[in-house]
Length: 430
Ligand code: KE4
Image (cartoon, rainbow, N blue to C red; front, side):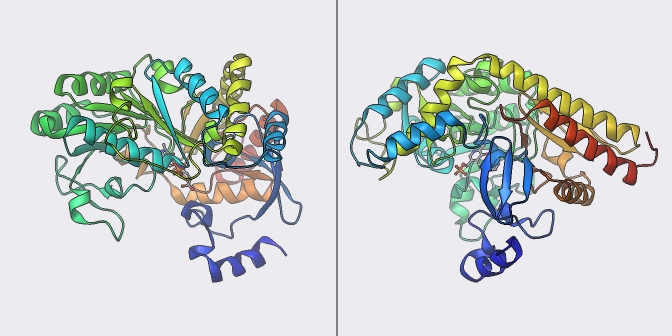
């Protein structure tokens, strides 16, 4: 059975044939891959074809697929049981390590996904402040939380309108949508709505419009204005937590939120999300306080065994971050020069081990500038790389991720294939 045949069957029994829309290849066309197994930096599809993986389960895998420390931890745990629905030691160990590493986090609650953690953190922010409105930014994605699936209203400072069927207007109107990296809109919104704003939620380094790095002034303004008006600042570090540094983007920038969302890497590829923050806020969460939140499998031993194995490995090998940064920078600079020398407009946004190639005339610093990216060219690039055994994210608006398993030879191979593509599509040959 090949991917095409499996996809035909999948489409009969699952919407779009997938369990998450972006996997359906709608942004690039073609048939999604059905992967049978993965090891290190590679995926192997159901026909045994191998691909160098730059999606890495959307950033959840940082050590490489099936890393021995993860396999060993999960094998050890699974024979002891998968979920007890009770307390167990791994929850304490993982919570203590997160609180040790993130100075802004004194208490944490585990969930089963990033979406669940975001939903809970918004409820907590509203419960703690007694306010309703939440500010989010265009191009940032925080999971499929009803009130955050909104698009801009008519003017900049209007309340959101639903961006999905099934979301009541009233939910969308609790959200103010602002442009990412635009300081003046933030200060204007707070001067107009500040006393009613419960929280600002932001990806401190955006990954869901492709990688967009914030200006320091933007993050500093968010921190200051929320303090001035008594709103909470929420850093959604589902991607950046343990990715851009061992203490996430907040550790990298030295700007600390009131609440932090974690996911992906802390599950080591199994379902784990988390939200955490100052004790005074987290003590509002049930059963301690009156903000209800629960989950049958929250913090279950099997998922935390994988996540704790990854987090402690990163703790014990801090040199990983500079290694990943160097290798990712080499890939970013290599791609940039290949396309520029071929006369193909490109901007590469990179921070730590996450990057995005934007085929764009202009620098990409917010969601408006991503709308002018050449999507067709990205789709052609995606399929050329795929034909040559390299799997990029199947969307121009996602981040590429490197892992510890990505070697210098992997980078060389990637750049060679990109060079061939650019020579064919470009206006000048090297
Ligand atoms: P999950 O519910 O998918 O675990 O997390 C939602 C989420 C929250 N916050 C950020 C910053 C995120 O990036 C995500 C999920 N990311 C997407 C892709 N970038 C997951 C891929 C998918 O939806 O299939």
